[in-house]
Each structure stands twice: as C-alpha cells, then as structure tokens.
Length: 173
Length: 173
DNA sequence: GCCGTAAAGCTAATATCATTAGCCAAACTC
DNA sequence: GAGTTTGGCTAATGATATTAGCTTTACGGC
Image (cartoon, rainbow over the protein chains, first blue to last red):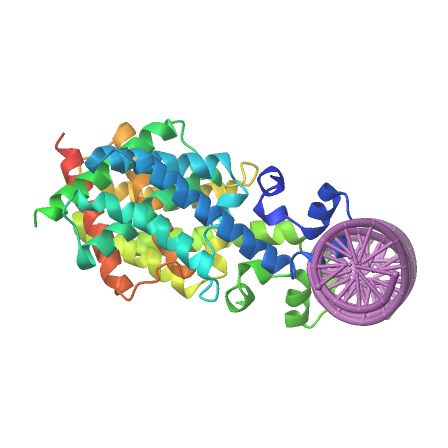
C-alpha cells in the first residue's frame, strides 16, 4: 500500500492520484479530501489491528496470550509503518464502523485480562497500561528513539514481562 | 509559543512569519527551511524535558523519584502540546547539542534506576520501559485515545505504580 | 567621519499540494 | 432508448515552501 511505502506524513492526494494513474481532482469523486482519506485509513488500520490481535489471542490465555497479542501488535506496526500511525487517530464518534473497530481492538486486550482476574477500573487501567506501553515502545522504536546497541527484541520481551508481573500482582491485591 | 498554540503539525513558516510580522522569505535568513525549524524545536524541547526531569528528580530517590519524574514528564507534554511532539524526533547525530540534550534526558531516568539497583542491559531495558510507558500514555492521552470515563490521573498513577513494581521485582532477580 | 561588509528585510518567481467548479463520456437503470 | 449516475477531465484559486536577487541599515576598521 502507498501509505506504507511513502510513510503516513507523505501520503498525499497527489501521490495517490499518480499511483492510481488518474488526475488529482478525480480523487474527489471517491474521498472528500485529505482528511477523509486519513480517516478512512484510520478505520482500516484499526480494524486490521483488531483482527490481528484477536487472531493472536485465539487459543491462548494468561501470560501466553499477553505475549502473543503484544508481539502481534508490534509486528503489525513494523510491517505497516504508514497505516499504523493512522490508527492513533481517536475514533470518530460519527463513524460507527470506526467505533466498532476501536471497540474490537480494545476488546481483544480486555479479554486477555480475564486471565488475570482484572475487571472494573482495574481492567480499564490495565488496558491503558497495555496500550501505553506497547504503543509507546513501537512509536519510539519506529522513530529511531532507541540509540543504544541493546537488542530491541529483548527490551520488548522485558517490557511485556513487566506488564505480566504488574497484572499478576495487581490481581492479588 | 506559536508551536504550542497551533499544534506541531500546523507550525508553518507562513504562520511563524505572520506572528513575527515579517514576510515569509525573510525567515530564511534565520533558518534553512521548515525541516531545520523542526530540528531546532526538537533540540529545544529535548533540552527542556531534560531540565524538567532533572529538577523533578532532585532530592528524591526510589519510587518517590520515579513518580516525580513521570509526573513532570507528563506535565511538560500537556503544557507544551506543540513542542512535545518535536522532541520525539531522533537526535541528529550531526548536532552535538541535540545529542547532549537527549543524553541528559535519558540520564535523568537512568539516575532513578540506581535506587532500584539496575544496571547494564537491565538498566537499558528499564529506561526503555519507562520511556515507552510514559510517552505512550501521554501520546494516547493527547490524541484523545482514552474514551472511557475513568479518570486518566488515576490510570497514570497505576501505570507508574506498575513500573515501580516491575523495577523492584527486577532488581531482586 | 567615511567605506565596506554583513545582517536582515523585501519583492518576484517557481513548484507542490489541496480544493472547487464545471464539463463530458461511459455505464447502468428502467 | 432516455435519463441518471459514475468517474474521469481541465481550469482556476489559494496556501505553503523555496530560491534568487535587490535594498537598507548598522557596525568595525581605518
């Protein structure tokens, strides 16, 4: 996909028109403008992430599920460097498809937490912790923010191990 | 500052020229272009973050220092919504000032970890964990990614508490 | 006090991108 | 077969970035 090839910030209507072999204004027969394009990409990426997370969780539970879902999330972000940033746009309240995709993605994470006996506010905090940790890691990694030679795969494993410990000790409070 | 008023992505040379009351091309006598402006802003923001983290850590240690530094980081991001994203740009290897600022900011986090008896690869992983968790949280929060009514301050406290637990159990391995 | 230069501004010109308006042909519907 | 929808086009406008080249002003050295 063009977005992944040129990067989210360089995904331009002009580039898209060139790729499709049509004149730039022709695109307006399909999207309302550049913002609508970003919005559509956000919905697509969010839905894909929901799919990927759900598939990774299938047949697993507990720490096993946590590691698999986190790995799947990171893999998606790395394999789709243009789509992934689009998914960070907050769901448009006026777009049911977007809301549903977001809910599905969050639901995949929530399901993992059942294995840690977390619910209510604790579950909300745990979901936010997961999202913050994994998104933050992936974003910093993509931006080249990790300068030291230390293997980032190892660091990611430790990050998820830390989440696992936090969830475990949390459930037993 | 203009960047914080209009947002990082809408920080444009045209807007800056208007703010300064000069014609747009006049800016080229001071910066090489829009990319150089972003770069300068990155250096400024990174240095300011380093200052803020260092100040927050002064006179504290252990979990106390961890909470203070995390709170200071989040406060900076919230108070400077235009500058903060600029700081996510990877340090320019050709810019010693940028490298130094980045090293100072990371050093402030590294100093906290002394209280947890973490060093070597474990310290690197711990720093990455801190950055991922805190950056991820403020990024999602700024993007409006936390839709549920649950108070985000509480969630942030829990996130930092989770980091604290992870570091503690880590030091004792 | 005068001269040369560097600093900092300007206008003009060019290129890219987004957007709107209005026209046209093919395809699809009834 | 007539009418409408679909999807493409050119032309025009406006915002932004960038470069080129001109001008003024302040300042240092003499």
